[in-house]
Length: 115
Length: 113
Image 1 (cartoon, rainbow over the protein chains, first blue to last red):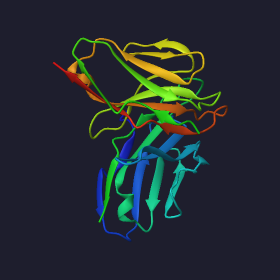
Image 2 (image 1 turned 120 degrees about the vertical axis):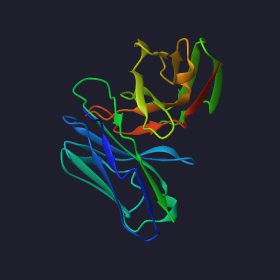
Image 3 (image 1 turned 30 degrees about the vertical axis):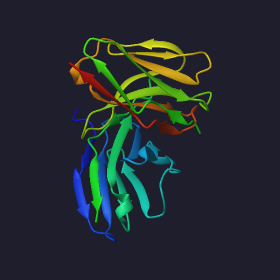
Image 4 (image 1 turned 90 degrees about the vertical axis):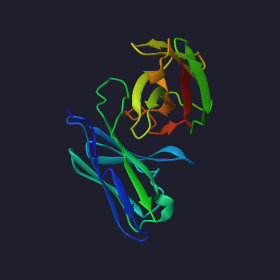
């Protein structure tokens, strides 16, 4: 398996623009997570899905952020409008629970810079 | 929510055992303790997970006391390639868990020759 795939790997945009980050989880995994990593706040869970259904979005910072999972193999995290403070590395992770450890497999991340 | 505290940095030498302790005083009853390793420009990678007592796998051991308010990741005989940031994660996402996943701030381990 190729692992969790994220695109783009780098995104530079201007304040006010819409940004869409994409994630393809590992095939067969039923959990998908979106994280944000910054120097100041570390790794923060934004939202996670189970079987394509959002379970907990309490980490989404504000209404400018939205996430969808239209099917088991694709998810998006959208920021509209973007602001400079949204600059961070955004990670997607997936997991297959099934009685085993809560092990998450992380993608390589998308480095977002908002000017 | 659990407040997670771990040392900011640690230094070690090749061949030594390294122990990194994480404090999680408010851990919930069904929370797991999981450790991840992260190299620059990569996503975190799972190392080990436990609930109580001791867990060992091929790369590390995890010690959790009875009160579960702290945990210690033990890396035996580290090498230069173990230089990375190590994160303690408290929580769980199964149906019997809180659904909250809280990462510590990370411990930067520098292994010297």
